[in-house]
Image (cartoon, rainbow, N blue to C red):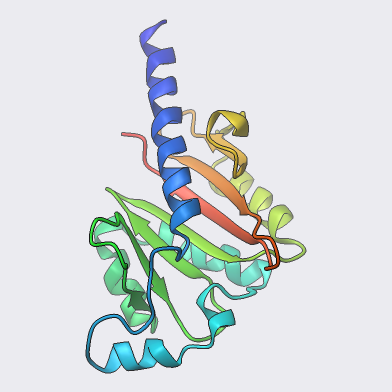
Length: 189
């Protein structure tokens, strides 16, 4: 295997691991109201459908651009807080994903690792098409990656030719509940 192929394979492995973590962690190990203080009380009052809401395709894409693409990784949590998002406390202290929610129709935002970022919402018509246009516009040199290489929940994935991040979408099907759609930016370096 050439060095370039090994790097691509390593990126795919890291992206697959983070995709699985984010798919499982889309609020699955989080508890509203964990902790103390005003935010705990506010989280306890959040309407369950607003935790991972039914965001419009435009809101979904705007949140991804604002928090994952246009805000430097080190400023994301502060920017989310300034936009009225609050941390949704993980049940497991070992959780590597920090989730931020807001009690309206904006998508949940997850931060992990050194710059990994994702937005999640209930699946709605038009989201996939909007995401495809966003990826084409913001990552014109990105090339598709076979989603099956990255995990069973990965619906689409792109790798930047410049050695940048992997961009991927996850579809989480939940029997008896609406499906969730996640757009993630996974750093590979």
